[in-house]
Length: 157
Image (cartoon, rainbow, N blue to C red):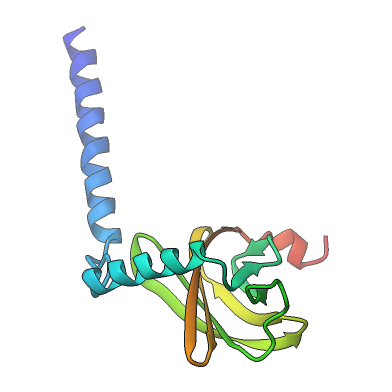
């Protein structure tokens, strides 16, 4: 019985040690470069989103690892398409800045914008849509899930 308890304790300690090693090796130490400024920007973004104003949304919902076409809709405070804006997409993961990327979106008409975005790994991603129409700039935070790309589907099976 003592041997069984010893084995269970050793397995438990090995699991904890393994978790610590994986956690330390996968975290690059950067939560955000400028936390105070990021907090102010987050507060301002949410304050402006709660006021009547522009809206931005992601039209397509299915994403897979690799290249994806992201379609974004942008409208003004009356619900009309916002045509003459510059739109970009910032993608990243919550735990690391390793995958942070910015993609420019091209106007597709009727307040729609299209950006070719790449997701190197599956899981949850933070997406920030940046809409600029001089002199205003607004950021919209979204969260999406990226699935693993199925090799069989890519081969046409």
